[in-house]
Image (cartoon, rainbow, N blue to C red; front, side):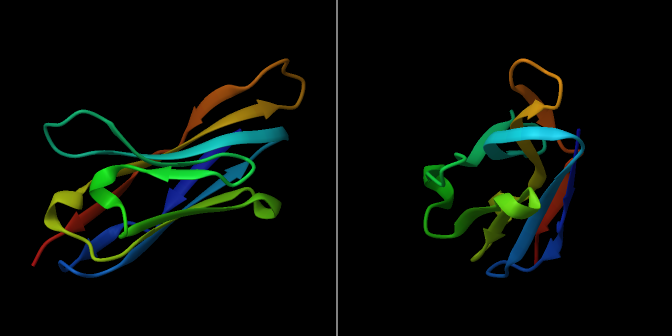
Length: 120
């Protein structure tokens, strides 16, 4: 099982980016899916999450600006980030609870991270 994140980059304040995370491998089920971020010198922060049924939550600091979505048919997680601020600068990681083929329960898998830099 692998998670491949993409879509990061350099953007001006007020700009937008869309992150994607594709899950590949022999998978029985993908349960919760998550976006985390880690800013320089700070701890890892859970930014947004979405359950298999589509229930989503985002951290207060990004409410109204970030939207999480998933395409279950394509095993893909998205994070639409609008009205970006310099304080959103961080490495963004996708994470998912996945039951792989042949495994009894779900395990947590992580993508490699994608850098988002918001700067003028």
